[in-house]
Image 1: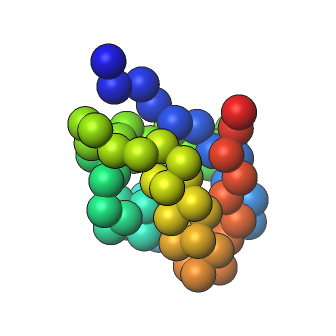
Image 2: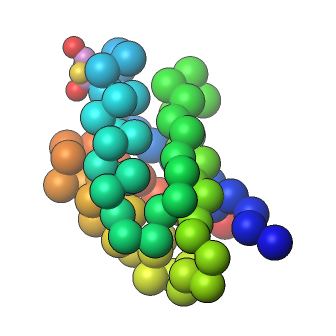
Length: 75
Ligand code: 9UX
């Protein structure tokens, strides 16, 4: 089983924002794939197998913050 991990993403206002956020999330080790939805202000991350979810969540939140946006895990 490899369920997606969902985040609220704040601060995106255009399609280039979406591409930026997708790019920084994809660069996080442990991320298999990501899809960002501007309208919903959400990202769905597919983790690589056998990745510690809590570590991955923290790393994604940090990476998105460094890019100038805000990510918050959707429990
Ligand atoms: Mo679009 Mo987003 O011109 O930071 S890239 S607003």
